[in-house]
Length: 113
Image 1 (cartoon, one colour):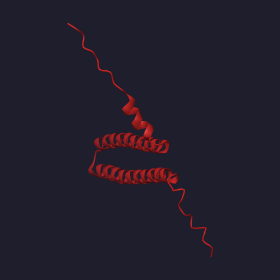
Image 2 (tube, rainbow, N blue to C red; image 1 turned 135 degrees about the horizontal axis):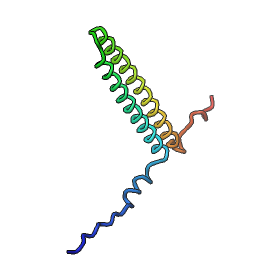
Image 3 (cartoon, rainbow, N blue to C red; image 1 turned 180 degrees about the vertical axis):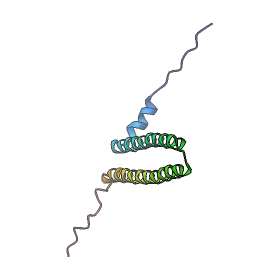
Image 4 (tube, helix red, strand yellow; image 1 turned 90 degrees about the horizontal axis):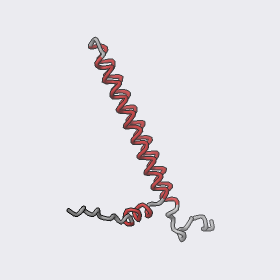
């Protein structure tokens, strides 16, 4: 029985896509992805800690205290994360559009007053 031949893959189309991405955009994508991953990992750990704390409660008052603290901290962390993401996206947008200005664009400082 003949052995099946594995098809050869031409990497040119895949590498062409990456070559077309400007370095600033690639860097911004890496920073945003890294930040999202870091936040997700922190949230999983925080959620597990909160689950342990909830399961160790011995009274309704303890449960309400742990739950309210968890909710308050979660809202704060998501708000902080949204602020960080907006900052990263604004920085990436500024870098991407900095070099896009037309060489013929007027600077509006050439009009005599």
